[in-house]
Image 1 (cartoon, rainbow, N blue to C red):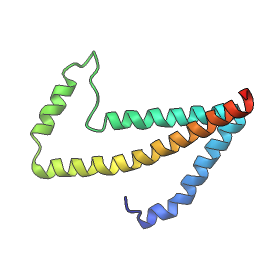
Image 2: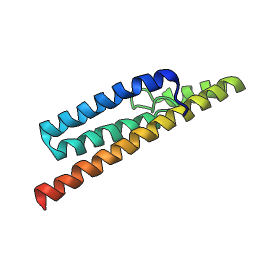
Image 3: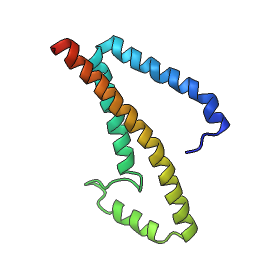
Image 4: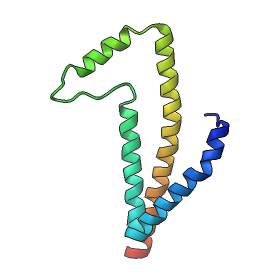
Length: 118
């Protein structure tokens, strides 16, 4: 996960927005707000990871997964390699999201139990 020039330029903006969201959730709901924000980020990251190979089937479209499997089987080697590279880069970013999620959960719920219930 090598950062390009635009990534370095946008990194302070991203950190500022994330800090603003964390402070906003803290001011709105206290430490429990940080924990809930961490849970939301974690659930979203997990859902994206589950659907990285395509949409998960639904009761209304039972053949969706089979059609996706057939489409992947008909791909050329270059297309499969490209898809694999995209998935690997996606998983690197999802790992960062999961670490941030775990940190917010531990910080939020840990401090909530320490100061509010302890």
